[in-house]
Image 1 (cartoon, rainbow, N blue to C red):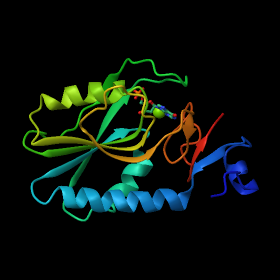
Image 2: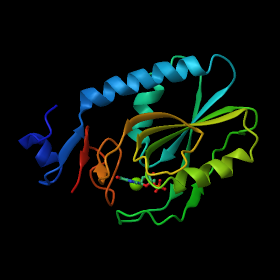
Image 3: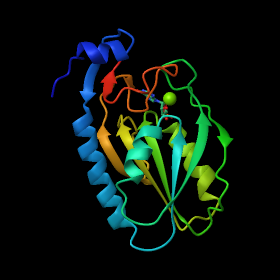
Amino acid sequence: MLTVLSPEMKRRAGGRDIRIVFDEATIAARVRALGHEITAAYPTGELLVLGLLKGSFIFLSDLVRQIDRPLHLDFLVASSYGAGTVSSGTMRLLYDPETPLEGKHLLIVEDIIDSGRTMQKMLSLLAVRRPASLAVCALLDKQLLQVPIPEVRWVGFPAPPAFLVGYGLDHAEDYRHLPFIGDLN
Ligand code: IMP
Ligand code: MG
C-alpha cells in the first residue's frame, strides 16, 4: 500500500504531508466484511443504527449500505474534544435519538475508540433505555483499554498510537473529507 500522498491528495489536504495508514480500497473491503457480519448477527428484531456524530458520518454511510436487512438510522451527538488532540474525558450529549429505544437492537457506530471514555459514557446513557441489545461497531480502536468494553463487538482496524484523520475523522474540523485514513503527525 502506498503510504505517501499523491500531489493531488496533498493539494486536497491543504498542502499537509499526511502518511496514509489505511487507503480507500482497504477501508472499502473491511466495511463490506463488517456489513456482512452485522447482517448475520441480527437475524430478527428491530435494528436501530445510531451514528455518533460527527466522526462516524462517512463510515456510517458506507456501512449501512452494506447491511442487508431492514434497519432504522438515527444519530447521537456528543462533544468532547474541541481543537485539541488529547482526550478531555468530558462529554456532553447534544442530540438524543427521537425514536424510542426500548426493545430495539441498538448498534452504535463510532469512528475511533481512544481512551474509551466517550463510548463508556454513551453506553451507560443508552443502557437505561432498556434496548433489546446494545453493541458497538467502531471503525478504529487504539486498544489502550486495560479492560475492553464488552459491547464493542466489531472493530474495523486496530489503530496505531497516532492522531488519525480522514474518512470522517478530523483535527479541528479539517481533513474529514479525505477518502483515506492517515497519520497527521
Ligand atoms: P475517547 O473518549 O478517548 O475514546 O475518544 C474518542 C473520540 O475522540 C472519538 O469519537 C474521536 O472523535 C476522537 N478521537 C480520538 N482519537 C482520535 C484520532 O486519532 N483522530 C481523530 N479523532 C480522534
Ligand atoms: Mg472528533
